Length: 148
Image 1 (tube, rainbow, N blue to C red):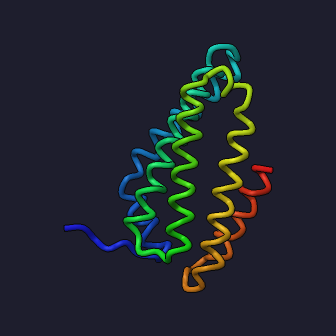
Image 2: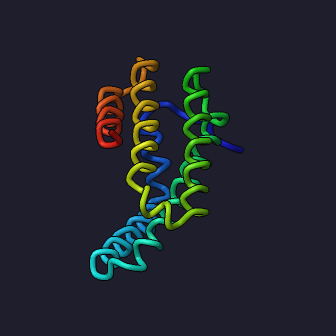
């Protein structure tokens, strides 16, 4: 039996907290990749481009699934679908064209951050009942600014 999805940030963080091992693993993996890229800037950059592509694909899949799994309005559902498809396409492109990805990595990250930021700002504006929606809007604006 599945539990219904809640819009309360505390419930969402609680579910995330139960799976903290995966976040820790991913964080350690990213730190190790960053240290390798600084210490040995040749081949690790290619590996980072592939890891980035895989990360964006996974993020896109989760956004796409969230569009249909969560109890969202039509507008937010569309944004999640668009964000999910954009993440999948950009991630596949990054994995398929590694050399181009290394060169265009900043552009790909920027496009994704702008789209993600717009989705966060939209969610903060559209869902007035969300607690901490000011922070969500701030994070969205920060993401858009970083993407630009």
